[in-house]
Image 1 (cartoon, rainbow, N blue to C red):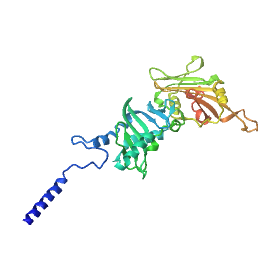
Image 2: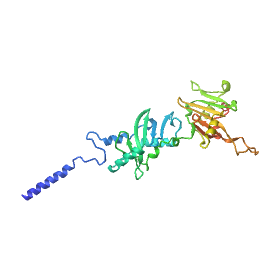
Image 3: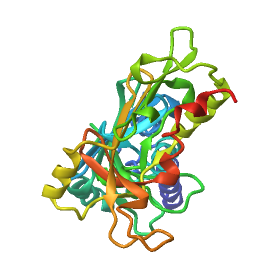
Image 4: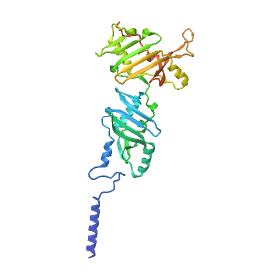
Length: 343
């Protein structure tokens, strides 16, 4: 009898052990609850993927210090808050992160409450647009303890994840910054030469050097001189060489130590050379240049020069920005009109 009871007991224990293998356990990937018909985890994982990064035309970033930037793609160039061009390296880095980052792991139960609070207080909001339509919104937090992962949460979700770029050792937070000046590139002119349809150079001190390069409806260029005279014997190869310069024309350094009174006086004075560029429907750029008064430079005979022989001031972005620009850069786009003539 005792042997029979023992046998039954062992049999029941064996059945319980086997049955336990088929009882659903609490999901260890807290706090997700797995639905039998649909995996929430699978949906969250796939939602981080942004397909076709090349179709992204706007990125909005905001941080908890009330800094915001809107990066907009116009004619294959990125601009910051519709003011100036964005650094190419920074754009490359953020697009690479958006396109390549993947979920490394859901956060643990121990991490959940802490990271939710940190994302709410420190997370940077990121909105991604394709063809003007919002396709993704998430909040980027800080790094994991080993600095090989980044805490991110999708908008509308209660589940943060640790994300990474496969093969990249580091965290992604520094790529998503909202400080306007840190995005800024040092370009004044940046255009695809094929899109340039208008360049005007006006020299207030020597109008013989004024000219306007215009592309007509037949995509042919002509150069207008003062009094609307058309330059004869136009050399189309010289036109192409000239337009290539507008791919990248940079300033030397921003002026930050000039008093507001002197700055206003300079910008409101008569400019020396004004250059206007139109490249496409939404790309119009203007710079006005001014002499830099010389204090120390002298010529070969020892005479003090009136103006700096190497640089001038440049005002652009509707007078909001003032920088020094070098002659060796701008001499390429302030040529004498005879430059365009066949020799």
